[in-house]
Each structure stands twice: as C-alpha cells, then as structure tokens.
Length: 117
Image (tube, rainbow, N blue to C red; front, side, top):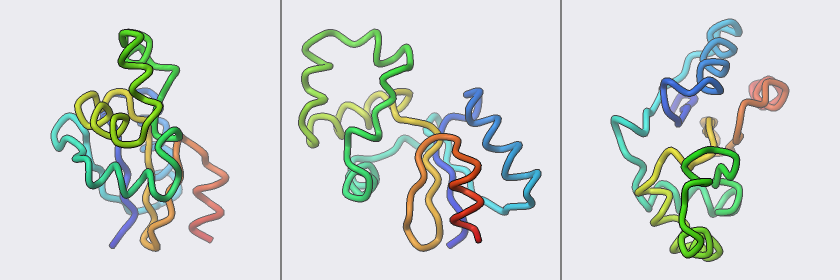
C-alpha cells in the first residue's frame, strides 16, 4: 500500500498538502470524499486510531451550520461517525494514512517528513 490522502480536492489545505507531497517527491493515492464518500467502516477505523473527536473539523462552515441537536450528537462515537459519513465536508482534512496504518490529521509537514524517515 502506498501513502493515502483523504479529503476534498478543492480545499485550500488539501492544495497545500498536494503541493508539499509533490515537492517532496512523495507518491500517494488521493481519495476524494466528493467522488467516493467515506463509509462508516472506514471512519470507525480512523476513529479507533485517533479518537472520533479528532476527525471532526469544528472550524469549518459545515460544522458551524449544524443545528444544536446535531452538534450534541457528535458526543458519541456511533452518532458522530454516521454524521461524518453523511457530511464528509466536516471531516478534518487531510487525513494521511501511511502504509503501516499510522494516521496524520491536518497539514503537518514535519510530522509527514518524520513518518517518511
């Protein structure tokens, strides 16, 4: 398995990530949530590694537009995973999955370099 990058193509943070990876000569596979919606199994697997709370992008407009009862639902893993699979724009971007299964959330160049050795 090669490096996998999950996110939304037109996101500014994703564009920075793509530029960084390409400038470093890092080969990767991109999974675009708009073309291939993340299923609950994938998101649960991510949540098992980093905690479901870490997957939620609370700074984005999708989160800010949620009704109060929807935000409250994000307090439990199962409800949060379901809502994230329905509203993929609310997932922190990027999620970078390394061949050994380790995840880096967000654009963190130093963490990426460190993981690649």
